[in-house]
Length: 125
Image (tube, rainbow, N blue to C red; front, side, top):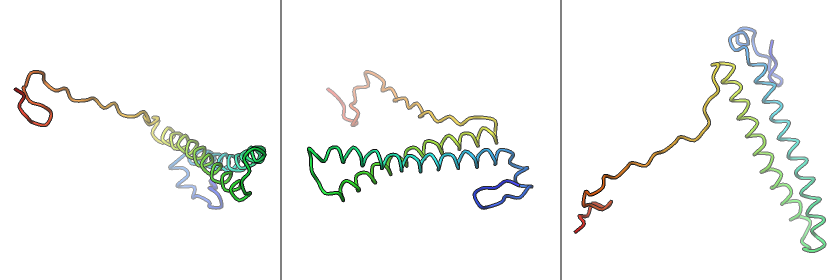
């Protein structure tokens, strides 16, 4: 039986997807990294702003707001990055191939030279 959080997965489903346990562990690790990033980021940003308040005084509420928003953005970025790696792991375990995440190469169509027309359809003299 595979546990995903507090939910237990049937043995039949776990046998059908043998990488489910690894994927669940990876996701759990990703969420814990995001939580740790939030806590550490909030503490560091708060400490930096406390040190800067000697030169640029502003109210404590702004100090807390900036630390919370900044650490939330950082936590989201870390969690998204790690979750993407877990999705790639899942695809590798299920299909045996890693998905291609590179942006598609877009080529510009070439205009034939000497047609006598502009790109707006006007005829050049």
